[in-house]
Every structure is written in C-alpha cells, then in structure tokens.
Image (tube, rainbow, N blue to C red; front, side, top):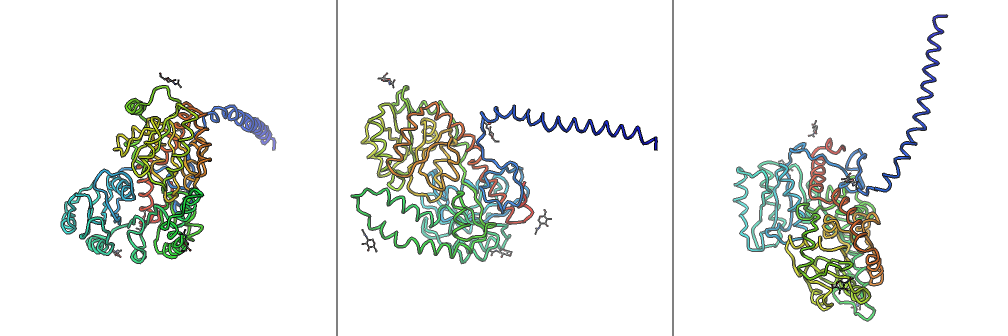
Length: 490
Ligand SMILES: *[C@@H]1O[C@H](CO)[C@@H](O)[C@H](O)[C@H]1NC(C)=O
Ligand SMILES: *[C@@H]1O[C@H](CO)[C@@H](O)[C@H](O)[C@H]1NC(C)=O
Ligand SMILES: *[C@@H]1O[C@H](CO)[C@@H](O)[C@H](O)[C@H]1NC(C)=O
Ligand SMILES: *[C@@H]1O[C@H](CO)[C@@H](O)[C@H](O)[C@H]1NC(C)=O
Ligand SMILES: *[C@@H]1O[C@H](CO)[C@@H](O)[C@H](O)[C@H]1NC(C)=O
C-alpha cells in the first residue's frame, strides 16, 4: 500500500503539469493565433484552391481547377486517348472549340499519352495527310504529338460516320482507354456505345435561352426585332428539351463553367457523379505580365503618358458581344472624362463605328498573338460587355493572366467562375446605364487601385486558368474513367 503513495503524488504532479499545460495550450496558442490574424487578414489570399479537400473527384461539384494536381512526369499511367473534334486547327487563328482541343491534347501528348484525333479535312490550304498513311505510320508514332486522322471529303465538312470508321480501325489494332468528344462531334447514338467516354460542352441550349433574353432586352424600343432572331426564339424551348433528352447518352460530361455544371445537374438531370467542371485554360507562355510591352504599345498608338485610365476590349466586334452597349457608354464617358482612353483589339462590323468615336479610341483591328499580349499589358481594365452567356470567353482569363481586373456582364457563368470575388473587378447588368455606372466607378478608383485588383486577378488566374492546370485536370478525369482507383484525391 505504502509503496503506492509516492506514485500517487507523482501522478498528482503529472496531472497538475498536464492541467497547466492544458491551460497554456488552451489560452496561449489561440492568443498567439489572434495576434497573428491581422497580418493574414491584411494580406488576404483570394486563391480559390481547395487544398484540404479529399475524396472521390467524381463527387466534386466545384471546378477541378481548384484542386492541386501533382505534376508527376511521367503520369501515373499513360493512356490511349481518342478525340473526336469537328475541326483541328492548322494555322495560328486564335479561338474556337478546336483551339481548346488542340491546346489540351497537345499538352496531354507531351505528357506521354498516346493521343489520336479524328477530324475533318483541313480547310485552310494545309495538305491533310491521308488517313491510310496515318494508320500505317502508327508504327513510327511520335510520342510528343497527337496523331491526327483526317477523314476524306470536302474541307472542313465533318462526317462523323467516316471518322467513326477510322476510329474503329485504329481501335481494333489497339483499343483506346478513353474517348473524348468535343461537343456533339460524336453524336449520342454512337456515344452511347462507349462507356469510357467524356464529352466537353462549350455552351448548351439552356444558356442560349439566356442569351436570347439578354440580346432582346438590349434592343432599343424603336429597333424592330429581326425576323431571324424572332424565328430562333420559336425553336428555343424544343431545343433545350431535345438536349435534355439526349445528353444522358454520354457517360461523362465536362462543363466549362461552374454554372453550366449546375444546369447539367439541376435542369438536365444528369447524375452529379457524371458531371465534372473543368474550366478551359490559357497558355501561360502567351499571356503574362509584361509592363514594358504594355508601355511600348501605348506610346506606339499615341496614348499620352499622363492619361488617367485606359480601357480595353478584345474579340469579335459584333452586336451580340455587346458592342452597342460599350459604344454608347463610352461616347458618354469620353465627354465627361477627357483623359480616359479605349483600345479596341479585333475586327468585325463594329470596328468602323469605334473609329468614328475619335482620337481617344485606338482601334488595332485583328491582332497577332504577340500584339494581343501587348494589348492586355497596355490597359488598366478589361471590359467584356457580352450578351452571350454560352460557354466562357477566354479573353477574361487572358486578361487576368496578364494581371488585369475585368469588367463584365453579370452572368451566372462569369459570376460563378471568373469574378468570384469583388476584388477581381466589376459586374454590370448588360445595359448601357449599368455599364456606364461601373465605368465611372473604375475612373474614380484610378489606375493604381486597378493595378492592385489586377494583382489579385493574377494570383487567382495563375492558380486556376493555366493550360497546364486544365491538362492535369482532364488527365485525372481520363485516368478516373479508365480505373476507379485514380478517382481518389489527393
Ligand atoms: C496565394 O496563394 C497562391 C497559391 O496558394 C500563391 O501562389 C500566391 O503567391 C498567394 N498570393 C499571395 C498574395 O499570398
Ligand atoms: C475498342 O476495342 C475494344 C477491344 O477490342 C472493344 O472492347 C471496344 O468495344 C472497342 N470500342 C469501341 C467503341 O468500339
Ligand atoms: C415573330 O414570330 C411570331 C410567330 O412565328 C409571329 O407571329 C410574329 O409576327 C413574329 N414577329 C415579328 C416581329 O417578326
Ligand atoms: C497631359 O499632358 C498634356 C500635354 O503635355 C496636357 O495637355 C494635358 O492637360 C495633361 N493631362 C493631364 C490629365 O494631366
Ligand atoms: C486499377 O488500378 C489498381 C491499382 O493500380 C489495380 O490494382 C487494379 O487492378 C486496376 N483495375 C482495373 C480494372 O484495371
């Protein structure tokens, strides 16, 4: 019994120590943390990364770009990937769904995957390699480029059945692990025979309904409705219903914006586990911050050094991209603020109208990739008054990757994926008054504050919108389609 006593007091001592330690832990550490908080608060990091998330990626309802994928090279497994794309770019023309396909699949091929593209004959003068030669040349397959199988026939005329025939031939010699269809390149009646398939939607019919609403509301009271537009309205709802009925035949769906993912789950009734959000990426080599390049362009096109603000727009200068709105809003802005400039990159019917606005509108016309990079670096804020919420304009990502804040139409797609934080810029309802109000706000803030916003945009874009991030997210999806064990993240 007595021998127990010292032990007991030792125990007592231990428990006292434990209690003391406990109090130190409970009170001091949070206090230290509290002391620390102000510095983390003043330097808010707005990156949207889901660093601590874990689970089956197929269950993720947020965009996969938020995940951190380990850039293992070579990848966990090399895959044989078949791609169906109506077109395949053969020149440097920017934009389009096929440009996305090329950026993505070139990156995947570089990572060691065997990529075969099935597409229509090239239309812009480049001699397509005949399919037979392609199939035969497979023995000498080049590991770092996709193999392109052009079907025969008229240039740029997609014949899915011809592409399907070639695919079957190639698949017979060695089966593919996964099939990727850019939109309906592979029609649903063929797609439903392929269980390991993913389709990417760059815009769906429900989004075009929204588009019609925005476009008609932007019409002036005295402006008649165009017969073509009126006719397209008649077919709108049947088109959505048709899509909802056939979409389910595709095994896996990739939505390119968070809001499109939501529509596929909530309106199109596709099971959550088959809907994945992967936002398109832009090439970080093409778009980055370069102050010198921006200043050079400014001086080249005659923008004085002491101007207060330079706005920029880029893309096709057509009505449904909202140019009538900006044209009117800027006409008003320039009379009130004599040292605000606008740079217009791109071409289209509205180019001449912009030219008529005088010397404070600098119209560049069509630009090459280097000029486009200079353009983004020359502006203080990028304006995108689009009336078409189908998909997501890459120009928004390009501007952010160049460290610029954006001013864009308040669409679910833009709000849910691009301007997810007020710091990243401004959103307006697509009408002249609302746009003008935000333009005045930006003028009042000035270029220094806008540059600060631009820095936050750059951080966010770098974590979300690089082509590398997009390729790694698709790679994980294809791996997960091939073998469920790859679906577990991290
Ligand atoms: C925010 O976080 C990202 C990724 O975690 C990092 O790359 C970036 O430098 C951070 N930015 C700031 C301002 O701390
Ligand atoms: C590709 O070939 C494999 C193996 O022969 C076969 O199981 C599969 O069904 C083929 N895929 C298609 C889409 O025909
Ligand atoms: C629009 O289409 C409807 C139905 O086809 C027709 O009744 C109406 O007159 C058209 N309106 C205009 C302005 O074309
Ligand atoms: C900028 O400089 C020009 C010529 O040097 C001058 O006329 C103009 O008033 C200046 N503008 C501002 C906002 O300082
Ligand atoms: C999936 O991958 C795991 C781990 O690499 C392997 O054990 C399993 O056999 C694979 N399953 C199939 C169906 O290939």
